[in-house]
Image (cartoon, rainbow, N blue to C red; front, side):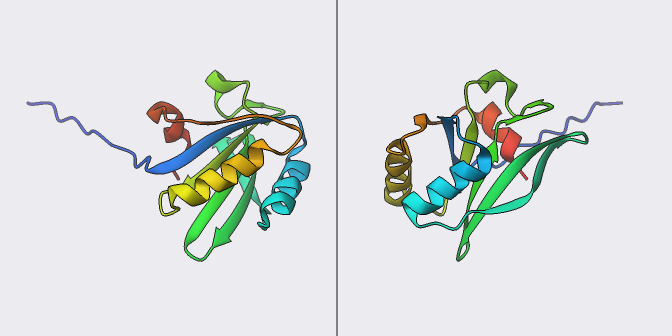
Length: 130
């Protein structure tokens, strides 16, 4: 009998940015709201495994959504290969690059933010497929 192989390709067509900042999640979300005029609200915790959850903030603009995930929790890291990242910010592909560029450049200017970078690694992005 011939073997059948099922390949699943995840849709990773979104922008993902890693942010290093030592503020607590609620304070960082508040700072972003104040700096960018957004309204991030705390959402249901993002579950990596049954016992490991990470704080999540969400901002909905019409049909577009921006997510802010904490990379660290008491139980460990969301992306263990990127321990230097404190937060992940995810933008749907429906956002234009000019808008995202504005958001990222403004976040870089926030005093406690150490660095912001775009994550293009497909394996890392697959953690955020939901």
